[in-house]
Image 1: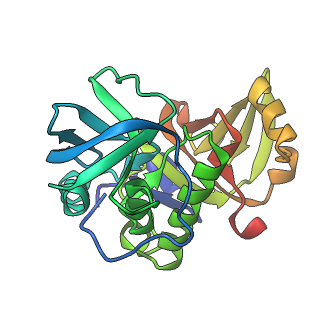
Image 2: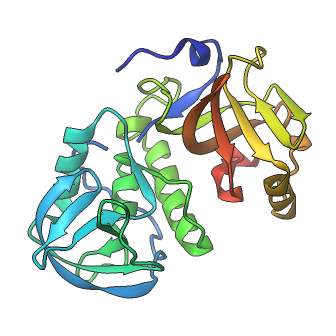
Length: 256
């Protein structure tokens, strides 16, 4: 475990998970979904890292919809290898445009299974659901897998009262805590998790996104004093911040 950043250390009541690790026999309940247009198939010859592998035809594939657990690259790579190494897989996705590293993003399935490999990793506590999944059925599948991992206290969720690793700048994180105040400055709304607005953790939401959240039934003022879960990339803007760009980034645990 790495040191906790001072700004986040001041914010009591946090659960912070940062996304990988070895494979246990866990499969997410009700894990249909994440089935998009076919992107072909192939045999996995090399697992490169915790969410990337190479097929026998030379294509490099990146698991879409998930982020690795920070600080556990070796374990995460082993976890993915235990599932797909040497196996035939099928790929699906809504966009097969390679990323800047030449990797094809895709949801990955083993023969005879309608459960994406991503959901298996998430259910085992070895990956986190990313903030960029927009398909409702797919995000529901992945969130159900993550909820299963939390209930089972698997791997990164083993101690839900602890801060996992450092919620460091530039990392993807799932942060859970109570919103102490909701404030607006200019065109930005701030969900403040601490009392020191310039140093403690906060969520930022632009006016345009706020309207989208309201349309999705998430009233920002109603979040004050409520416990929420937010996921995204931690940035330094005074204190650590996560910018919300879509409704799926905010959850209300237990519907509180």
